[in-house]
Length: 159
Image 1 (cartoon, rainbow, N blue to C red):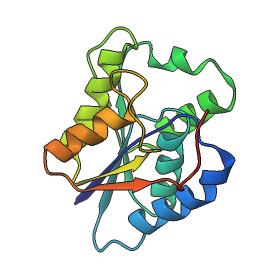
Image 2: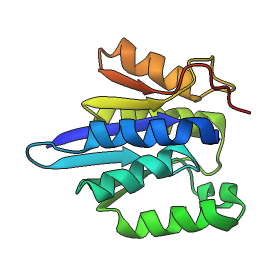
Image 3: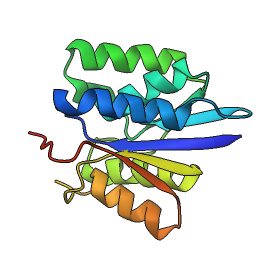
Image 4: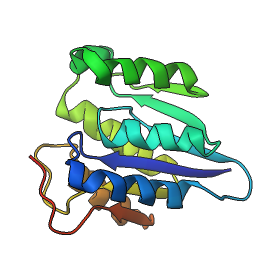
């Protein structure tokens, strides 16, 4: 089974959305044999990746960073997406952190990088804004020799 993981920004500017969706479909669609998609289901890139992976027939493995992770969503559409995608997941892996800290996010990102054959990064190419951020997970995956596909539109800056 081929395993593709995701890391990416929670905030995706509208100008990059169609480009990222097309890129995700290109990576996830048309595989021979079974495909497993790994995501922490954070708002933004993680949920978009999980949705497209499911549409492409992949099994979804959810990596939950901490016991209080759900509370970090605050409600609304991101929380509803998190619940919906968790229900559709084939497998759920819960990390042993009580609280959602940068360390918990880093552990989830490195778990995904360790477990996948390819990492997809929805990343603007800038340094991480905190420990466990997208840039740090990309650097970690590359240090393992994992192929990393970066999806972003040149010149677009996120908030």
